[in-house]
Amino acid sequence: MSLFVVLITIKGAHTNLPTSFIIPSPFLLLPRKARKATPNDPTIQIISMGWFKRLKDGIQTATRNKKEAPEGLWYKCKRCKETSTMKELRENSYKCSYCNYHVRIGSYDYFDLIFDGNYELLFEEYRAVDHLNFVDLKSYPDRLESAYDKTGLTDAITVAKGKVNRRPLIIAAMDFKFIGGSMGSVVGERIARAIDYARDNRIPFMIISKTGGARMMESAFSLMQMAKTSAKLSTLAKAGVPYFSFLTDPTTGGVTASFAMLGDINFAEPEALIGFAGPRVIKETIKRDLPEGFQTSEFLLEHGFLDFIVDRKDVKERISDLLQLFDK
Image (cartoon, rainbow, N blue to C red; front, side):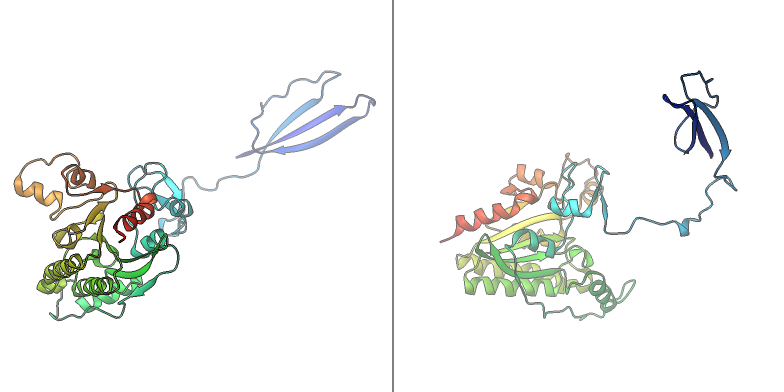
């Protein structure tokens, strides 16, 4: 890199004494030949001199020594690849401001979006137990401890009681970060306890589903939760207490085959994957191409499995409308 030093000599209008000054200009592109001075014009001399000199060609920084942008400051959209700050993402209800892609969020994020402010956690004391001594790449207790440390959650579902526009509501929100949001005994037990609490106190109940299905580490104990939660929901219906099912991306497996589709009102976020088996498994099984948009919330709405689809920024007001509609 060269430094251009501009030497300007000017004769003042009221004096014949020349005035000279030097301007270092590393960013200006100037001609290498200075034009000749005239009696009424300044004389410009351009001196090209070395300032920085590369000792070695090419980038010498090892990959392991490269500095990355700090985590948690930026978000790159998985669909449109545009970048925004995490602050902008939160202010836009965790949606891409360019393409409206709904980012997967956790249970506490939904509580913050839906409840008026403070809320009370319920049934956090229940924890998973390894009845089968299950081991795959690691033991089930080790996998649980890893999930506890990584997520700060106590299982794949969190139950909270709060108010939505001053109307009471109990929400059981699943979280995909905890072992893929898988349904185990604790998930079923917390839902059952939440249903009993909602029925006894006549408070509307809502489940936010975000799951890969049954938890394989609990085998048949996990599958039993499908029947358990479905039976409990029937008692809520008999008591005349409303139940809303909010399906988010993804909602698959045994959850779809049980409580996720049993709401008095079933609704979902845009473009959520909803189904029992995944589209790849179905395609490989039937050996046929699947319809466009298969197993998306839009596809299910068109075929009558959903009542409506709601944008995340509108979800609180839509839930408030439902609470008012079912209020007796």
